[in-house]
Amino acid sequence: MCKFLALNTSDFIYTPTNKSVEKISFTWQTPSNIALVKYWGKSNPQIPKNASISFTLNNCHTITTIDFEKKSSNNIEFELFFEGKKKDDFKPKIAKFFERILAYCSYISEYSMVINSENSFPHSSGIASSASGMSAIAMCLMSLEKVLNPTISEDFFNKKASFLARLGSGSASRSIEGPLVVWGEHPEIEESSDLFGVKFPYKIHPVFENYQDAILLVDKGEKQVSSTVGHNLMHNHPYAENRFKQANENLSILSKILQNGEIKEFINLVESEALTLHAMMLTSNPYFILMKPNTIEIINKIWEYRAENNSNICFTLDAGANVHVLYPENEKDSIDQFIKDILSKYCQKNQYICDVLGFGPKKLQY
Ligand code: DP6
Image (cartoon, rainbow, N blue to C red; front, side, top):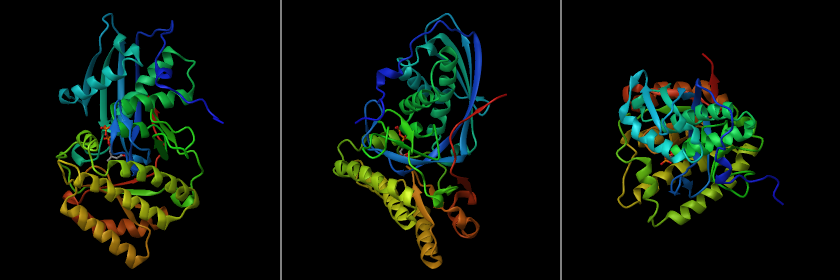
């Protein structure tokens, strides 16, 4: 028997109320996330081909303020500033996002919006800012919606924020809560949905508390192939169906590992997911490689260190050359030293970012 009422797309359509506000601003800080089981392959509109799960990060985040001012015309109107400077080259992506969500948030055409955004991590670091960036905009919109319709619950607020963020960038749907979020319908994850991310619903083993993620900045340049192109290449991919099945099975296995703390199994699954993601890129047509020589050097050094020190260090990758080094808090001192002494040499300008599991967005008051 179904224990909860599943939400459908139509449940997210805003029904106008008699409330109105002339001028209002909201600021949200929302995190980046790193997938353990990867989302790679989607259908329209931003529906994942398999369920994915990610660690929410703490230090890598976006802070976005939106100033809303009521206007008489009925079109989408916004200005965009990034780190204090007008950013017209980011506008088309955001414009497309607003057009996509207009059906669910009709109020956005009634306000002129000034968006001011900044990231805690360097813009050209190769760290995807779409997850934190889109989720921050979604949270600001939901804050306005909450003023217009104060009856919405916190649960609905978060689900709709994730639903909207997803329409901007799939992985952004997982940046609304923490420390672990699942996006994509999965039989073993209660309330999971293709439409929005949900907090991992089971108790996590203490070994994963304060889990560390050091992001090694191997290549800070523009990616040669965007995630959107990569997702599309899964459409006629010879291994696609098996991959989607494997990802869902891996999520079942990982769900148990996260609860029982079998860290060796965690390492095996997470590294296999990272390499499988890149294997999908290698076997697409056209094929492409996002790893750089130093990505491989780092992976080999991590494997050597793990064997020599009986360590629980491991890595994951996103759609780029940077390496996320994952390790439990009780190894923090020794692994931080290893990163500083050895791995940083393989990073551009020796740069890396130390992060830790986080708990989701924060509303900031000025
Ligand atoms: C490799 O969320 O960036 O990081 O939905 O097209 O915006 P769009 O793609 P995006 O894809 C992320 C892919 C990934 C894996 C993951 O985060 O699950």
